Image (cartoon, rainbow, N blue to C red):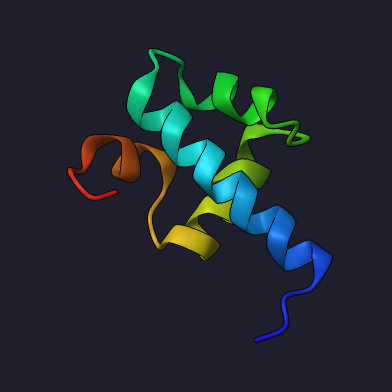
Length: 64
């Protein structure tokens, strides 16, 4: 299956976001900033689209 460069970048961002949310004491705004999102709302929308959960829902879940 072909993956565009954009798809690959999104996949990497999701992996990084998951690691930061699960393994750090950073809040959602700090994670969004570390991943170079323009703002927290953009990060929340991105993660919800790609993971199906908001960052707070993801951080509180036991699912990886």
